[in-house]
Image (tube, rainbow, N blue to C red; front, top):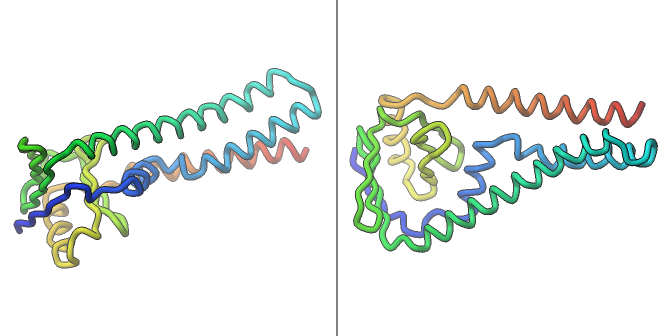
Length: 186
């Protein structure tokens, strides 16, 4: 397999947002948690006035809001850096990912990658636990996608453990919301 693509200006803001949300499932539920915490705070103030428990309810809200600002800042910085890229060509072979960025060649042998993840719209090749190469499937033909995933399956492990930890975190968040609502009702 040898697939070459010009990726200059192919990744969009939505691609980065989907990557970050996919990577951090906790962010998908954070609006629900914020609403629950704000509601609990309002009821706490109405019933008891401004107390220490009010501050406890407000701290997670502030943390979620700060995390959204951090994500916005990362995406804005990444898109700004992407505009400065004059050339970006990627090459996928049976054994490695290679990109040519502004005359500099970067190579990642598949067996040195942390893992890969496939979604309906993307292939993510994780360089390490937190950073991934985003490969939108819309840029490849179906046959190319099949060849790429076959090569990935031979050399890399598919991400599974992170999905489990993400779902456990989602479960904890849902439990938190239920407990907050339960405390408000009683």
